[in-house]
Image 1 (cartoon, rainbow, N blue to C red):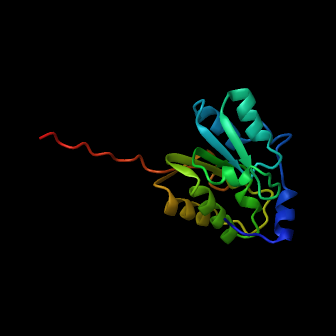
Image 2: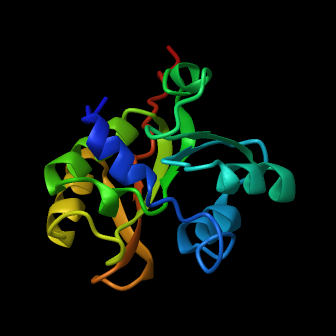
Image 3: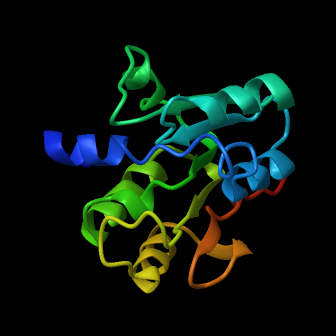
Length: 175
């Protein structure tokens, strides 16, 4: 997992945006709600106070849990040892202290995605805690996933869905 200083964790913790215009209208959360089947395991990576994961669970019946480095809970280690159909991060990459840390977070999240699962992230302009580099984020996703698609936003402030390739199964010939 990506390591942080106490000051970095504190700075990221001050950026939680689960209420107001971001709240339930957040583009990442709306996309996850619209494209997730009931019962699919979902992880809200960087969940802040857990508002989005709770909303997915209570309003949409999606089996969502949350993890946040700035607000660790006793169950977090268990959550980070599982694999999920969908891992999503709303306003997480942009608040990392550097692009290198953001790429490290992509590595952390990619390890949590099931074989045929997906990662949904945004990379908004604000708040930004480092010099933004959209190309570096897309390159990092393409190194870890087969396909990356812009599902909302613009290339300047994208919402991206990265998918692992479908597993290929070979049937043995009888005989």
